[in-house]
Every structure is written in C-alpha cells, then in structure tokens.
Length: 170
Image (cartoon, rainbow, N blue to C red; front, top):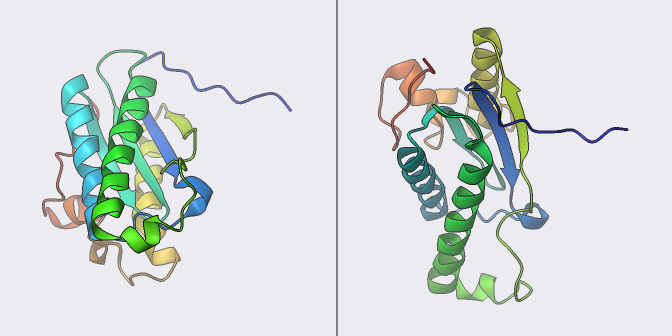
C-alpha cells in the first residue's frame, strides 16, 4: 500500500486530527482543552491563518484550518503540538501530580504525527465541520452539538464565542 502524502501546496483548507499518546485522556480537564484552543489561536494569528472549525475531545483533536500562503500546515501543526504539549505537561505536574507520576518519564503528550486531509471544495469543508461538531454527540457526551463547549458548533449554529476567531476561507 502506498504511503499517504500530505501536500502543503495551495491555499485550501486542511482538516487535521491528532491524538494523545497511547490515546490517554489528557484533555479531560477543561484547562487542557483551553490550552489546546489558546495555542491554536496564537499559532493561527502568527501565521495569518484562520480556523473554520474544531472540536476538542478527551483524547484527540479535530480542526479545519486555512492559510494564506502555501506550506504552512506542517509548521503550524508542529508548533501547535509542541507548545500545547509543554503547557499540558506543566499543568499535570502542577495540578495532577499523582496522575503524572504514573506516566513513564519522557512520555509525550501527543502521538508523533497528525492525520491531514486537504479540502478542495466548499461541500467537503461543510461535511468535515459537521462531522467534527457531531463527534461529542456520536459518543454520547451531549445530545446536541451546541451543548459541547469545546467545539466551534456554538459559533456556527448560535453565533456564540468559542475562544478563538472563526471564519470561512476566502
């Protein structure tokens, strides 16, 4: 089977997913989720990118992002994961030392890679955003997508703020 390649060329949206190392539920605490959202916002601002949608689950993250220049997805993902990893590890050391002590020394917060999917059409972009928003509903955390506070559903469906600016690609 040929290896899947992620192309950074073109200014289209990128659907990305990444998971906690060994699918640990390190994003359970609200503070962890805030770190992930805040770090995404700062990286997008730094690279003049936009977020079209996101959802933060207990053990993984989905997002759709867009950049005005080519080849920006990998640097954004690397920095997003690096910075959020450091902050989440520090959070666990401070607030949850008993849990942190059960982890192997040097275990990372995130799996080494991310899954990327290039989005070329508006229809596929809407499909991916809807899929993300329905993730907490599918696993039984909420009955309506807008009830999950850690996604962009409340912004797109109710116009409520979600911690970072959201927009559709130009």
